[in-house]
Image 1 (spheres, rainbow, N blue to C red):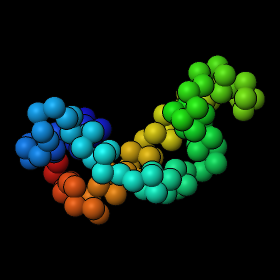
Image 2 (cartoon, helix red, strand yellow):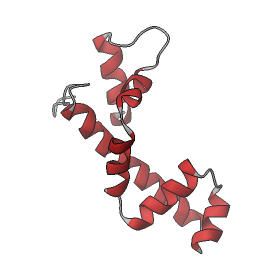
Image 3 (cartoon, rainbow, N blue to C red):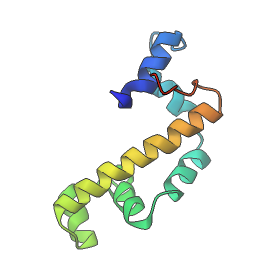
Image 4 (cartoon, rainbow, N blue to C red):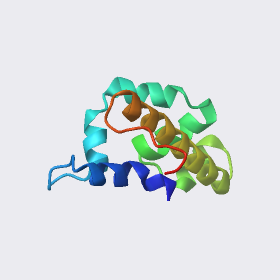
Length: 106
């Protein structure tokens, strides 16, 4: 449920044009530098799996072979890395004024 806060908040605020999804609006405002900062904030083991999966397009099996780790480890690292990126990019969206910071009651 917490994962959809940004999406729900943008829908409720009425910011998005009819043709764009709320997450696209925020993503379109991010610069390459913002994304690189978020990636750099990850540990090396997390950054490697994100780059191999999401930038290079390798499968879990291929990543496991490249990094010489089990497929399950690839999956768990990728999940945790994406969650951390989500948090970093959420913080950026708040700091940039794209969304309001969620309260403890949300």
